[in-house]
Length: 191
Image (cartoon, rainbow, N blue to C red; front, side):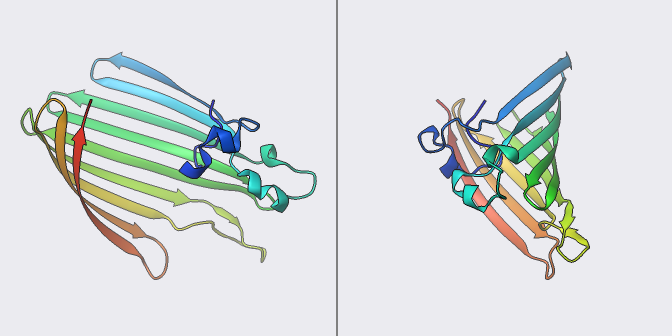
């Protein structure tokens, strides 16, 4: 149980501001059929509007009447120097006067350990948005589909420190197509 939905932004997370009047409930069921394999199923249900949205809702409806429903699946495989992950999530937002706004997101990730201290990783992410009424008798996507790919090289200096160099490329399906490049350097200290 948490006080805000999965899609909420960090400024909504304070229990002092938001309270627990409209909580979100979630859980995960995991299965490990053999040492290399891990499987999981996750779900979450709860209202997603912030309290300041209340005056904009249809008369007679409250924050608890419009929920975000999420179902997710995950799989992981590890064998010697190779690690593979995949997750897929379907999310539905119940939207006033519109109906359901659906989105499907997933990622595939592979990591290879070249040595005990050096690794490389590759990740593919995609979000696909459903359609909603466009107000003119038709339907249109409620946001832009997008995909992103990430490539990373990492070096574990000690048992508690790691350096990583990562490149990401993002592409949106909008017209004109928008894209972005990001290069990041990360230092991680575990304690």
